[in-house]
Image (tube, rainbow, N blue to C red; front, side):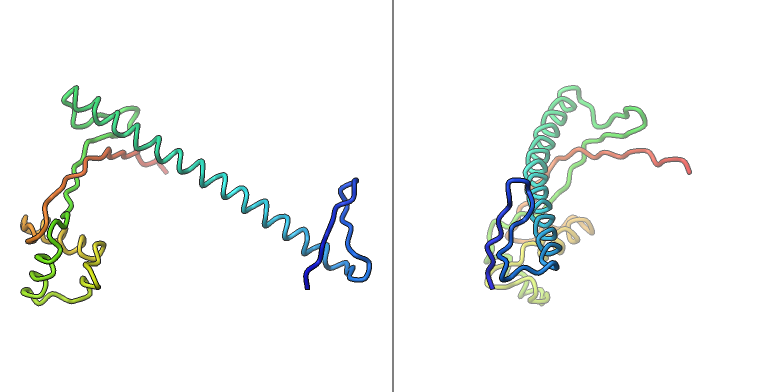
Amino acid sequence: MNMNIKRNEDGSLQLPEAVYDPSQDKLIQDLETYKALSDEIREDEAALKISKQHKVEMQQKILGDMAARKMQSTKVDGTSYSITKKPKANIVDEQAVMDELVVRGIDSSYIKTSIDKTAFNTLAGDLLRNGGEIFPGTEIVETEYLSVRTPKKAV
C-alpha cells in the first residue's frame, strides 16, 4: 500500500484519516532518520574522495621534495617518514603467464577467463620476495610511497 504523507505548515504530519495509524509516526521518523543518514554518508563519501585525492597529491609532492634533498627518511616529533619501494609484478603477456602456470602445475584458481590479478599478485609477490624470481610474462614495477609510523603511546 502506498501512502501519500504531507506536512502541515507547522511541520506536523498530515496522514489520510482513513489510513491513520499512530504506529505510522515511528515508521515516518525511522524513514526520515534513514534519509538523513544516507545524505550524511553521501556527503562523507564525497569528502573522503576529495581527501584521498589530496593525500595522493601531497604524497607525490613530499616524495619529490624528499628526493630533491636526497632524503630516504626523516623523523618529526617522533613520527617517522620514509620512502619505501614496493615491487609488484605487472602482467604484460597474459598468455605467457597462463602457460607458465600450467607448466608449473600451479592451481588453476589463478585462471578464470583471464588471470585473477589479485590472487596472482600474491603468488608473484611471494616468488619475488623469496628468491627474486620474476614470473615469465610479467615486468616488475616499483611503486614508491610514503611510509608513516607514529610512536606508540606509553601506557
